[in-house]
Length: 331
Image 1: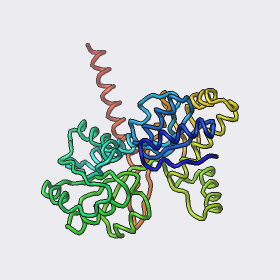
Image 2 (image 1 turned 45 degrees about the vertical axis):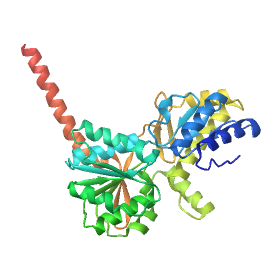
Image 3 (image 1 turned 60 degrees about the horizontal axis):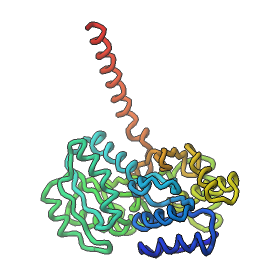
Image 4 (image 1 turned 135 degrees about the vertical axis):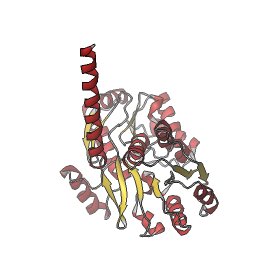
C-alpha cells in the first residue's frame, strides 16, 4: 500500500497520480476526498489509464465526466439533497427556505441539487448567501435572512462553520429548522453548537446505526485496532478497497482487466450497505437522513421517513390510473 497526500492543491493531486502510476507502479488508486482535487486527479487517471475508486467525494458532477477508469462507492449529494427536499417540501409542507453556504466548490456545487429540487417544486430559495471558509462571524448574513422570515435555513459547508452558523442563529432568536450536509454529522458539531440546538436535519450517505452483521463485525474490528468507531470515510474506504482487492483477485495484475472487473459490478453488498451502480459506475443507493435528537444524530431511511407518504401517493396514482382506464373504455 502506497500512501500519498494531495495537500488540497489542484496541481498537487495530478502530480501525485503521476508519481503513483510511474514511480510506484501501483495497479489501482483509492481516493481522493476533495471535489476540486478529484476532478483533476481523474483526468490524469484517464490519460494514464489506471483504475481509480473514489470513496469520499460526494460531488454529483464528479462521476458525470463519464471517465471509464473512475468509480465511486459513496452515495452522492444528489441522493442526499433529493431526500432532504422531499422531506422538507412534501412531508413537512414547508415553502420558504433560505441558504447560507460555504464559498467554495463544495458549498457551491453540492447545494445545487437541493436548490434545483426546490425550484422544480415551486419553492426557490428566498436568498442564497455565502461565507468564506474559516469565517466565525455570520451575523450580517443571518440578519438579512432573518428579515425574509424563512421557515428553514440550509447550509452546505464543513462541520465547524455549520455549527457556528447554527449557534449564531439561536443566539439571534432564530428558531427555524436547520438543514445541512453530511459533513456536519459529527460529535464535533454538538461540541461547538451545544446541546439545545432545536430542529437540525442533514443528509447522510449511509446508516451508521445499521445492525447488519457484516457492518457490526467491521465496527468491532476497527474499534479493536484503532481505538475509535469508524466514521463515513473509514467505512466507505473499506468498501472501496475491498472492491478493488476482489477485482484484482479476479483480473490479476493488469490495470485494464482490473477496470473491466470493476465495470461488471452492478450491485455490491459492503459494510455501508447495498450499493447499486449505474452505467457510469456511480453508486446511486438511497441516502439517509440524520436528525439531531438529545445531543446526537439519529439516522432514518427513506422508507422510515417517507413510507407513509409514498404509500398514499402510490394509492393516489393507482386511483388515477383506474380512472383513466374506465374513461378510455367508456369512450
